[in-house]
Image (cartoon, rainbow, N blue to C red; front, side):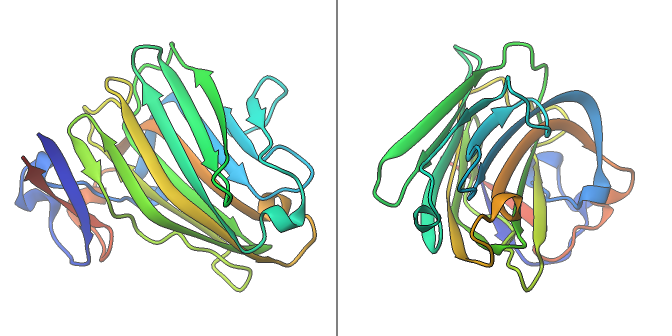
Length: 230
């Protein structure tokens, strides 16, 4: 039995149902990170540097797991890529797979045996040097199935950065079961020949709790209602 969740655009009090009935998407100001543990996966349309990345923090270092998905502006501009970030409990390993428009794939993986708990997923895009859009979002694993997500589309005309969060619950642990996060990311026309950090998709997982009062009211489009799928 899975918990299926879908986005609905309403205002509601989180206290109106049990914790299992709501899957909130929280504003950044409403998150309080409890642990230093985090995992970051990134895919960016950079024609000269790393293009896919798995790491334990947001600062690229030589020890990060990185791979190219093909250099050259034509390989990214006005192209759509599939992505799959997954976790396997047996090997305690994260895998990031990028599928190119020609259906070929690139996969990198990172063992993470020392991560204690992860209960929040962040998706963000940067579009200051070219439009970035996210579609076909799906999270599946354990008792969770999520097939909708607030828009994080960005473009040079604004917003140039957008981020939203999925909070699985205070007691949830995304390293306790196998799961997969999939979707498509599309890049538009670039304003520079090398868009670098200006066009990217960033996925972060970390442990958090909502700040006091955050879940008292969830804004339109930010509430996720759950129903059981048998």
